[in-house]
Length: 363
Length: 203
Image (tube, rainbow over all chains, first blue to last red; front, side, top):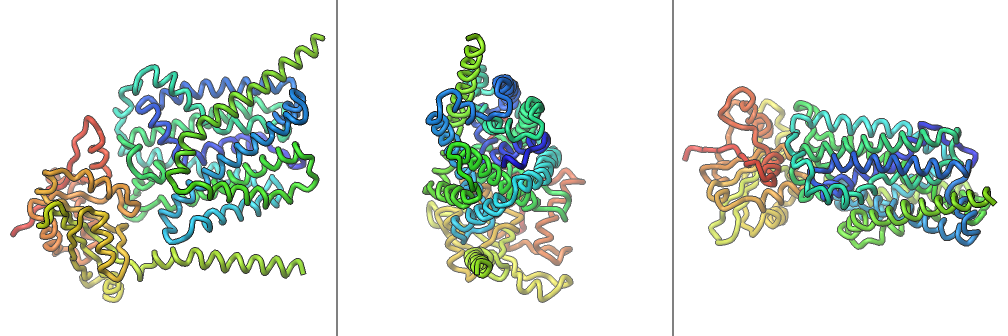
């Protein structure tokens, strides 16, 4: 991984991929459930905070050029602390991706493969992940660079093709369940910016590390625009979202797209794009996890880890008894994991490291 | 040796996945499915039950006969406690699995509509096979009778008739293009009223 550096656009797309995979599952529904008709307003508010966090991360990393959070953790608390932080982040990446994979595969099973065991559907993704990770990281990045714009375009297409079904009045009451719910309780919606977690590991991987600020800010702004687009589509189209179609609210929206009598049932095309985006996401997660593992163990041959991480993702994905359990993890547990680990722990380490660095200079 | 092991491994994987996915492929094969064109839901003579009528398309005869002849279709009904139970019951009667992905019309009898149809609407909208663009009709007569009497004279293909029969909503004001998606949306909206097409058949 150290040999294959990430370009600026590739890095932005990488961050976006994380959010895209969340939105094709239950994220928009969770946002709408939390803040109702005020979701767009809440997202604008949360986006501003997310941009500020991204800027703060950039500022905190400024003192540590070419280092990621694992290296910084070592300078803060020594080798043991570095290992603990590494394991926590690996667990977070593997856990969140596995649960997402399980939910996505459950959706595919319901729609297209009703008689196939879920293990085999998940295995297809695991095999894709293993093959992709045996190649250089550039292969994943370039594939991602090809697929993600298509996915983003498909969302814009979804928005405009469903426009005739929009009821703009659904944005009212503009403050949803009230100011407190929108701006205080709604703060947990910051978890939708899952890409922030990957910013901690980007600096040493960037081709142009001086463009880290650009990558961080632009990726968060694009994420915000993308999220607002997705949520607007659902908010303006449906008055429910919460009650219907447990598979994915965006999939539900794609079923309404009809271009004349010839182009109907376009949801298959959307699903194909989402499958490809999901494979890219899994590959990225696995690469980052392997990179962290390499740092905390000083392992020489990283390729041997591919199958281990692949099997770990498979095992965690098969842990939930059913879709209800995995959806509970995705909707409820993930949010708090993100706030606790990515925001509190990640920023905490960076702040402590900066204070320690400043003290060193003063002394 | 290493290459042989690799090839054997790949071949084994292909065989395993072919076997795993063939079940789904076979279950969704056109030969194993009975396509429902319309569903009619009435109150049953048995208290607390629904009479659910399915209008099937005979896919084998339509493929043999060509487009110039009329497609054969048949109607069958079951009494069940819910729509899902009715679908399961019909699945056990017919040799083929019911597929609702081409169901274009859902007919409710006026008598049932008066008592409330939200449970049935929820069941239908959460079924991945039912299209949100399927039309919803509330019939003055019972739904079974409405479906049985659907015999288009200007259109030879019944599925096409169901597909286009709401087209007149574009140029007349007599019939709305009321879909189940819109109906469900309105049902869950505090400020909207769900609407359906009013259906009549001469007795």
